[in-house]
Length: 339
Image (cartoon, rainbow, N blue to C red; front, side, top):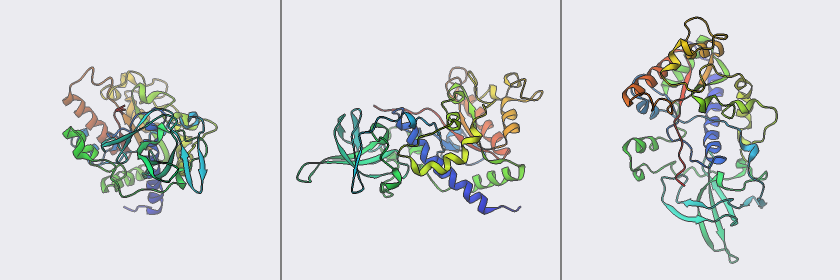
């Protein structure tokens, strides 16, 4: 089998940039922390938890940045100054698993010193007239008035601090998930899935979504295809945004209100106008678009109708069916704002 590694490298580079963007948007405009359970399925077989642990988070590129809070930002000698639009907790590191170290009140001016790689956490300091630091810590970017002046490409990146401190998490399963880096090395399994997709004719520019009403809405991914956009501080993601945006306009036959990990395999739920006879919504969507990535999110409807064992079976089947088509599955669950 021959693989065009130059093409693959470029595609995977875009995947990394998309992954960066995901946490920024989710924790930004909506105020919630990025979902730690968002992962690309990395290996065949096993439960969703086992597969999710092998993977890295990929983009939920919901362009709510055009609604970013009004500017309250100034720049002096590459030091960005900003305020919080609401009270926000400061942490010892870039994540909610680090210990809190203080509170940043609304309207309090601070200097932006550095960011984590993704940019959804910023390290800020407040100094007095004598230059003494009186308040410092890591805060979610989404709680700050970033305006139109801040450019994350110009903020130094801190690569020394881990994304999380798993031992601080009071849950064995969540601790295991937090233990995985947000942007790890892409596994050999995903390289193999990508290569198979190229053999089958998958389109490197196409991403689709599979899920319930949370995925079906236009505010999730589809909004990227609208005319006009404002990335605000996330300027370094423009190339990736332009790379994928056109493929996200058409609706997905595998994402609709009421859908679950069970009925996505049921031909009764397929669109009669777009799908072939006895074709499930999932089969229909993959045949029509030949995507290279599938953003998959099920859960709200599933927990009402099935137990953990059934859900595990259905999600495993969904992952297997997706990878069999040479499509990289990106699994996500709910996010939660501890504040």
